[in-house]
Length: 267
Image 1: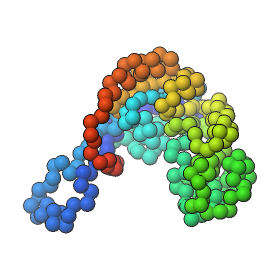
Image 2: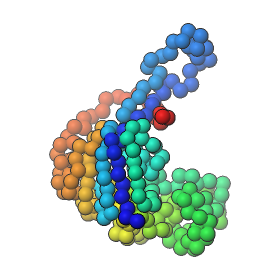
Image 3: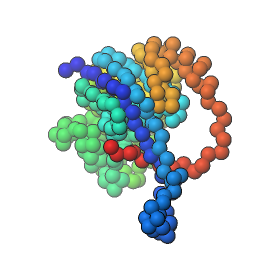
Image 4: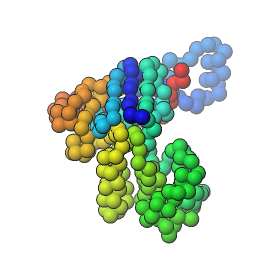
């Protein structure tokens, strides 16, 4: 089957709760009077009418300012965030290298987490059984593999997660920033593996702030700005457009309110 990703008129909204834990008195009064704090909930468009077709052979770089919607678009393609409008159609199996290590159980050993994380990536027990020794060898954690990972350093966590996530050659590879945790030796080894995956996958999407990396690895680039695609073309042209036009829109930020956790609005 030929790999293909087709995003048609897809939009995604998030909801922010300004007061996530109102006092009991406020909640009761609101229920009795029917009045609610209009400022308690705000919505914003994370992605706006995205139209994008990615075909086999595309090495697509995704660039934009912080908050432009880059990681959100990858998560929409994976299915973590279904669009509120439009649709996303994917042909081919996706391997997402997004937030590596999500789902690790810190009370379990490294070996047990290989199977747990493999299952979360859609791989069978039998498949992980065959890959276990290769994962351990690549991670260079054989001495610690039966130790609970709560005792691992952040670098060890990263090495184990990367080794699990990249062990199988993907049909469609989604990468949110290339692995950069650990000592220089492991980073170099990880970079070599990433290049191999880029060359062997049917489709690759790379989100990165490293523009040299984008030009080096990609054959097509899109520029996202405030949830919209504002550019699509050759890497050098799009990087130049981003640096000289989009990035110039960034102004020193004023004092911001405390960060709040956005929540997905269900259909």
